[in-house]
Length: 407
Image (cartoon, rainbow, N blue to C red):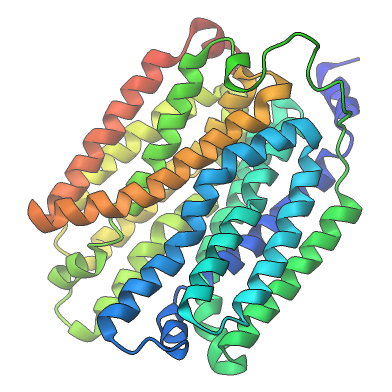
């Protein structure tokens, strides 16, 4: 029997699981991000009237979910190793459905922030899907499968704000939350009835074997992947605080600034959506490390001209190309971790990877805003380029001979 046929027999449900996880991740990410366009309006509706306070509370409420998710991601990963990955998806989808519905019933801004924290604590469907797909997919197809899943996640980040801008004028803000909760409840039902996991208590961890981080035999490549995930999010998010101001210097017509800024923000996500599955398949063929090193190096080079553009369309094209280069990065990062971590510890370590990515989402805007305000906006691109270049060198140095051949 060939290795491919044996892998298919070992994981007979991986395609169906991938389909459910892809749709479920898309819907939950849409729900987490759709409030971005109307969040200040909802904060005002909840009784906050001062403009500065509205901006402050909007930032706190939006960041609360991702802050909480970063804290609990390793915990949910460890529990997935102990009780099964499907169980964590069931918990996350039901928790998110309840949280989104309750957010639509908030009476004041404190309740809004508390419920956003609850959404981060109870959620984690996308990260849980990554763990399940990584562990329930044949290793020789993991890059493509994780690339497809990454496409769904990035598409959710792209579609969420668009729906958030379109739905409230049609059905109202509170009804938008309730609709999102209902859609996620459908995801909960699909998870319960259609996902099949080849997981048996007592067989996940061999007696006497180490657990968690201690179970990783060679920590160097795993640490490199945690750093790479952080760098990816930092590179994508560092431009966020300055993009509108930067575009205002490039576009002569003030009425077009916000439109061009929105296109610039979406360009990298669109590029990643188009390339994620293809780069994942390429990584399965030529090695995940090669794709990671190449993606980091190419993005470092593409960041340099972004500091010197003179027209808005130039920035759009460069961000799109950078998105194409980075699309296969997260699937390859997850695959390398999966190849270097025992099955019984995969969930916990992938949870750390998720936390590192959330940390990049927090650090990126803070660092970009500080550097852009105190040093200059071109310095944001050049500084991020240096970090990505150093990441490529670190990834190259962390790749062992065995991993260079096997992955």
